[in-house]
Amino acid sequence: MVIVDTTVWIDFFNDTSTPETEWLDRELTQQRLGLLDLILCEVLQGVSTEEEAADVLRELRTFQIFDSTGIDLAIGAARNYRRYADKDRRYARRSTASSRRSVSTAGMPYFITSETSILSSSISG
Image (cartoon, rainbow, N blue to C red):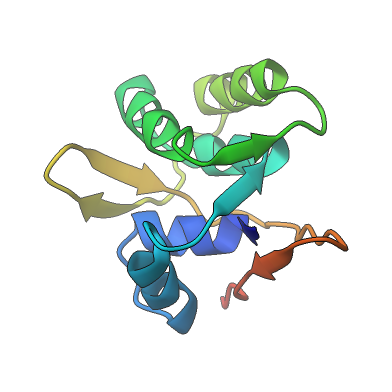
């Protein structure tokens, strides 16, 4: 199992090429991947619209999501963040055949467990 960190998902959805996103793109169907509900919350916080959030959520739910605070709480917290966050946030766009998404790169913590690998990258700037 590889836990994919928030920073990697953000780069992936923003179509930013890094060693981690290239690995993720190659391994999406080859590796057993997962994320924590807090990572789900952080990624969804950076999405600008409810429609985009639904697309990102649908895609991320194809992976195992580990419950640390509650998946419903994580989704609700991200929805409230999008609803009340400053409208001047910057967004990058990634266009895919199924949807158009944008994810902000606000500060992201790292999660490490003793029984899994973690795929993470650092955010510069």
